[in-house]
Image (tube, rainbow, N blue to C red):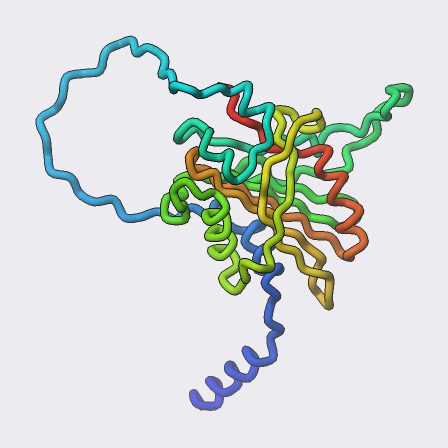
Length: 249
């Protein structure tokens, strides 16, 4: 009896469809709260308590750091080294705002995107009436993924962490807006992107990723739509309502 039950279970598992790589990426974006890899903390020997810190500490000044210049220039993979150490970078969006006519002559319409999750574990998620799903998240403490001084290699490592079977040659470079406010003009920030076409029970999807090693920040964006055509039409619209905001100081 037990042997027959085990045989039936194996047969059911064999009939289950296998998810595509992009489906796994989308599932990761929809279910993981962060992609941080953390290492076990090592025990430190007991030490004599040190003197309390002073009540006032002068602001830290990083020699040669110009936040305004960094915000006004393309954030290429090489330019990531110009960021301040350990100052996180994050997304900014206006996806949930009412739709306003360009000439402001009409009453704003309802938002095109519905907010489902708002900054829970670094993750934000939206959906729209066409059936598209958008998720982005920001995570820190990316140490094990970071190749010091090489944001591109670090970003490839992040992609392979999320999609173990992905080939580096299948990752294309893409630009997302690099602006303090979504919808405002500005330069771009380099990401690596991986796309999959729609199929039976699989939506068309694109996954964008970027690691900013110096800032110890990982950025991930996924967009999935029921058809390839809808994904192609929705992507540029999303980019007018989403940006990566440079550090303000």
